Image 1 (cartoon, rainbow, N blue to C red):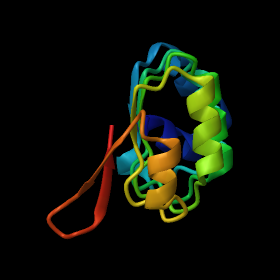
Image 2: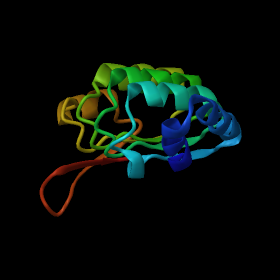
Image 3: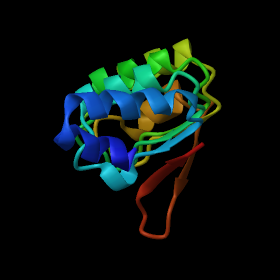
Length: 140
């Protein structure tokens, strides 16, 4: 995936070739590329990785609801880390969870998704705990 982000700077043809190779990818850990991943990039990756089962977008602060909706094309997605994404809303995550076989979901640090919403909409996916700093932490 890092190669893909760098490939975009080289040429569009190179980017398309790298995206094609991602077709069999099962896991995407994009937190290291958080500064580069936005809704448009996420949509392209999701279309190119239809078999992905595990995605970590923790800290990808440019991802919003459009990026979350794009994940619906990943029909085998089961584990999703959306922690520390300040732009996403509960509505987008609910729609995604209804569309996919999600069994593990992390939403800690999502400023637009409060504890009450976590308890009412996501209790079947996550466990709400208090960590040592007294901050709410959500883990699947």
